Image 1 (tube, rainbow, N blue to C red):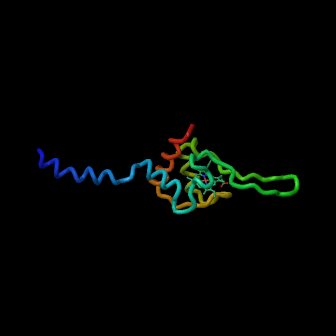
Image 2 (cartoon, rainbow, N blue to C red):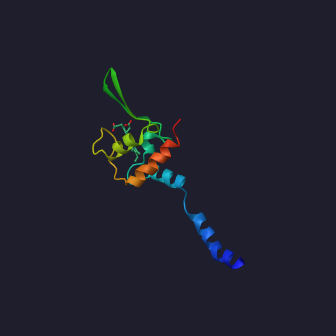
Image 3 (cartoon, rainbow, N blue to C red):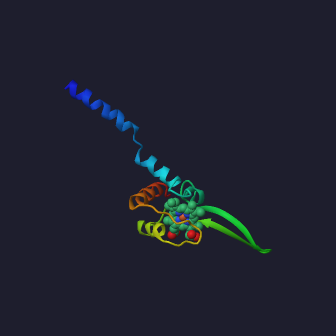
Length: 110
Ligand code: HEC
């Protein structure tokens, strides 16, 4: 019995050094092989103003990134695989990465 314990003990130590799903999800959100999602959608994914410019003397145009915490998975996935957006860059994420990002954002929905 004791021998088995000593054989298995190093495995517990190893398991401890892996990152959790939550840590991985946060990392990916901030570094998705391209500009981090948080730079436009905010760290909590609730959207924010990303820029303003004056179109003419009476008109100021406000550019916003939308709240992305309340979308259905279908919409979310479609947006991330669409090839053209007005402002958002195109990403090359795997199906698994899209799922992980969705998981991250669902946890932040209010
Ligand atoms: C440069 C700013 C910017 C970055 C970086 C960015 N987005 Fe966006 N995102 C936008 C804007 C702006 C829109 C609205 C559509 C448009 O104008 O392109 C949008 C739209 C979306 C939508 C669709 C929202 C809807 O209501 O249909 C999703 C989903 C999304 N972004 C997820 C992400 C994820 C996940 C990342 C990181 C991998 C990311 N975005 C990075 C600016 C950004």
